[in-house]
Image (cartoon, rainbow, N blue to C red):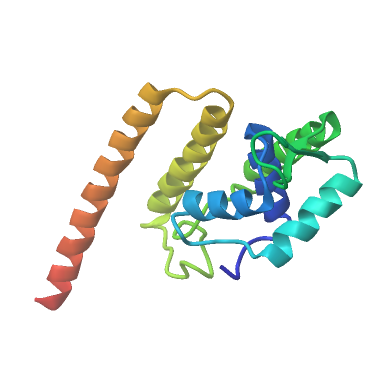
Length: 175
């Protein structure tokens, strides 16, 4: 995936290392799994980052010679945890300040045809994206399987309804 924002890999690796000790190979595989195969960072980006994190004392190497000799895993130090918390804080502030959310609700130039009549849709999309990000942030801090199930149901239902409207509009165009 070529369009990964600068600094995102560092944030992602910090989050993973905050969860559990991981090797470079495990990090690459985990990112690929979590992005459903859309992104697998290369060794050329992971290993220099792991080295940099260690040099700056944000992480430290741990090994378990009895379990897996020769496998280097990394964990976050207290300094690394503080850096992660700063990243989380900046991301939240950026989202609040800019209303960052994924397309199609980015507005011009991605949706150059926004009119007064469709501006309500844009605002509703922004609210949905922002509330989804906030929910994910909170779930990262405290997982609730019940909330995940309910939110999944709500979003799946909304997607089905929007897909139905889209199909109806498309069929009207063909008439």
